[in-house]
Image (cartoon, rainbow, N blue to C red; front, side):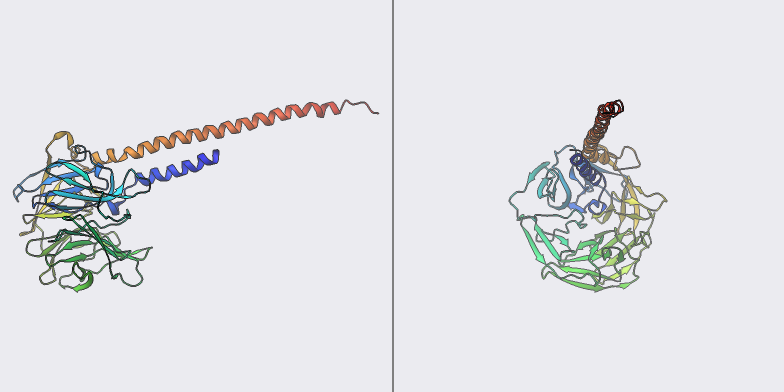
Length: 414
């Protein structure tokens, strides 16, 4: 019995602490724009982070941006590690069922106008999602297709946001010999149907090496083939965990990130002109410092950076502003998020936008910890009880044996 309890405690300890730790690879929020006016912040679990920002009225002179905090008000399903894509008024969430110990996959849609969730049960979705899969959906393209790369399995998955159908394509690997997979890159879909994969790092299973920045990889969504594109101009320093967004005139704005040695990427701002495959490093006005894990979107030629970590200071901090870059002049400004319902404000502390998220995310962890403490207490009591019982039996046996030994000394000789 004690052994069974011991193994149960070990199992619960593993579950508790594996649940408590953030998997940052899966934590990076997606970059989603809807109707050229909204962008969405979705965190590792929908139920602990789901916000809709209205960028339609923001201009270069604005000081605030309005947002709706949907994590409490829409009865969000428990979808872990969501991969998200948007089209028109709908968001599509593909992830792991948080209520299933076998971690089967589930899929939901969410209408931002009607605030209604719908489970998509009749779609031929993949049966498994690796929590360490670092890429979110890319797209959709002009045909409504979104793309999800499983580069360590040489598979490209597509999901059509119009027909709600999945497809799977086997692809040729472009990872250099001696390396297992490619991680922490950015993927940007271009008007010609190619997806540009920039930066990141290659892994051999024990370490990492920076992907070169004097070339980038493209995936042709029509032929499902890879190609390497060489660049010209001033090549920026290597980076991963950076952001990338496409302007209306074909520039990919790259910002932030770190290299394979976790040093801030330099320069922070780099621009790739996809018409000529030419790099440039424009001078920033009102620079905001080094950031990483900061997704970006572009609405009306303004690039928004949200969430993310500021590494310019000695102590990395999660910023509580929305940073805005005017892509015509490369001038930065910041916005104060203003929630439509003050009770749902997550920026109230002024220094950590994850305050409400952490409290909610720990619900399951706290329950597991309480259960772990209870079972551990039972185990301790069982061990103590067994120990005292053995001592009691040992003393009782000794007391029964001792008189017989003494009586032998009084026997009369024959």
